[in-house]
Length: 121
Image (cartoon, rainbow, N blue to C red; front, side, top):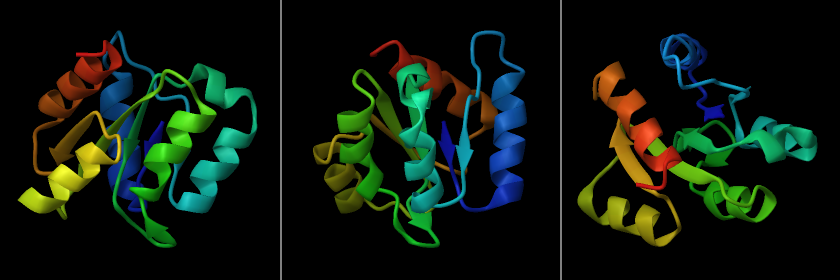
């Protein structure tokens, strides 16, 4: 699941990840509300990894970390954001994020991180 408000970036990332033979994007959301709506259905049983941006139009994406874990047991959460600083990274990890990745990383690195957290590594 990709949670990113910038539609062009989200769609490009979804395309890039979908070209990886072992990755599938099963849902996309542009806000906290859309992410929560996606979790209402049977989708929550299909989620292995959530890639979450922090700067969403209706709040901080970090609000989703605990909620994703409660509603979709076994999910791993990767924060992908351009607004990171050392203290913030520690906060996100303490809040339950499995990984924190800067958006400036290459698509290959992002895909590798999705794989790594999906395997529990």
